[in-house]
Image (tube, rainbow, N blue to C red; front, side, top):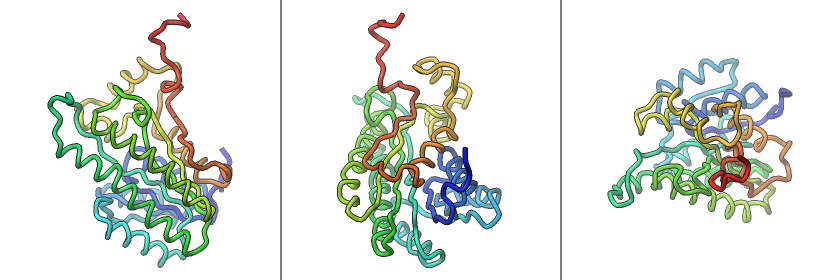
Length: 263
């Protein structure tokens, strides 16, 4: 891939201390962006920022459930760097799978608070900064294959990601008049801490399970694959793409093999 696709841009990556966020932060920095990682994993986030180095990345503590922290984070970026060009709203959680008959409503509230409310707060304050500075920015959110399908993730996570997709589409309709693009990426299973921790499995086990049901054989989805999709949506290469849900799922959401048509 060509370098410098985000040259001169300032980017904020939430949930950037690990997984898809970390992979994307590294790609952003490698392509010329000044990157701010926002997370609640302070030690890990600081380590990632330091490892990127070259003055290309800093870490800032931000709990997206707290709107004042979101506002302070965006404000500090504008104060320090003069602008915000790109937001990758990626912070999220996944609760352990459970039957709808036994759903813990507090877990549902938690998923909605981080995955949806946190995403909305980030879009709100990032867009305010972009509008104020007349920046034709790019906002990218992490949805999921579960944003369009049932039965592939826990109920609370599925509900929250459906909401993220709706939020992206709605926000794109308003922010387009300012030249701000709003899109999302929807990966299928990636062996990140988010996916492994709730079910107590190893990355290898996650990858094996996902490969077994994948429509696209011969490749295992990695965080970097998702990061490349985010990089495209963040860059000027996608300058007329908005309101789009870019599925990074190997065709999983497009093909139903239950009918055995292709066997």
